[in-house]
Image (cartoon, one colour):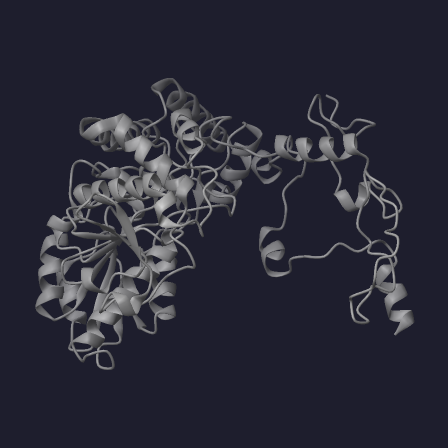
Length: 508
């Protein structure tokens, strides 16, 4: 079998070196003449040597970025089984609405009189977020889930300070199975973190919470459904115990898509919860681009919601309260402007096109798909909590394959050759060798079966003793197995031409 080619290409998958290796500072796509009669206004800061940027012709530039785009795995290419991330299909209707004139071309500094339609849309979105969660207030401005967490914890901090207990209550309880952002957010907000250890059933127990309670506890941060893909059945009793102790309950809303339309977090005693719009209501996910993490607040925390927020006048027009000093107890603001308009339009379009019954089916299908995969994969893999149905994601581990010489990372690398992005590896941390799979509600049964067939075939290959196959995977990708740990700890963030380091040292 041919494994190497003269060009470095594999079929129609083009090899693509770094742009620095392809281009050169002496070549450019466009040549501009030096300006005539221009006055130097750089104050002696003019560059003394040419900037070593890679110059390419226009077709080379276009091909470079198109080839890079072809190396990306995306939800539009196939099933994206990442657990906890909820990589779901984004309906094109949402994209169409977000690109409508009047939404796509708004400027954050426009006078409010010229953006009444946008404010109405945001107000409608806020209304439905409050309705779906059973909470009286929402802050739309947080830009992501962790940003929303921060907003919720700052509201809790402000409420405690208003009670005169800001300096007294500094401890936040966080289960060991929590998303990593939870303890990080609590610490960033000025609290200390006290871990609630996990139990064998993957859930948070009321007795463990009560054992940690004290007059210095500010809040508990809990995820429901949790990161093991399980619903927390004692959540209402935990909320009652937390409130009796004078503290607040923050719920990580990352998994709200598993219960939307079925359960209102406000009815469970939640005081604050962020909502990842991309996970529950389907807006583009990842890439470091625009995001949104609105945070709903209980009656106890609503007065402390950050600005800006929308106020509807008697004549039907809307204005923005922009300054904390104009809103009494607001803790401040989270960002310069009002949030991500494109995310708001997409989320509201998703809500309105689904309706209440459709959103309820979102949750039902997410849970159904996960349990279907669980039923198909459980005979072939170890499932730490496999004796009971899961919620929106199924958690497996490598306990059954590790004795045969294959670990979670090996299985994940083998999936790359099969054309799938791997599942989430080694999370949640409470399960050794975790393999967390979330099919989402948007995958049809035939796609689930294709993925399950691949996973089962790989399990059978493990049982056949073909360890080397897994240790050598992936073999069909542009890059083979990398040292992920070294790449994370010793990243090379700057490209240098061969000989640059030696020349620099000689000059020194």
